[in-house]
Length: 194
Image (cartoon, rainbow, N blue to C red; front, side):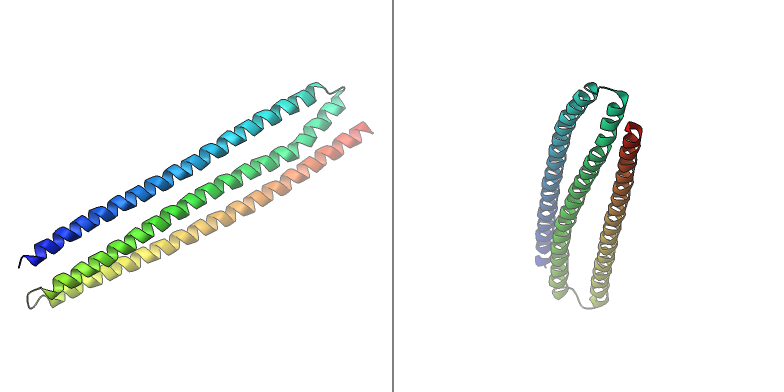
């Protein structure tokens, strides 16, 4: 008779340990993602400052308006490419961090479900006669919860893939538009110079 409270006590301890492990894993992944984001922003800010200084020196050194506009047009394409590169890196960090979150959560959820099912099996061995339908209902509820989680996980992964696909399409479209604009500006400058 005393085995059941002891089993629940052990299960509670295991559940708390599992929750703490999940919290620790998610905290670690959050800090890693923030660290990558800070590094990206610092390197981008440094690069942008250097490029802006160089561009300003070039523009101030222009001898006439045509050269000024030619320099301005020539800087449009590299700036657009840098913005695209930043966007891709940012999306990569976000996607990677999200994937790490999912992986950590999935492993903890699988382990917690295994422990709950094990507890239910152990308790059902010592359950009084006539409680079989209750034990079957609990197992069915756990099975349904697992199926719901798996469907949610699958849907979330599909949403992330669709978001990545849409972002890649938008980046490609923006890149093509920026290239056309840069080429048109260069052509206009060349025509004005002639």
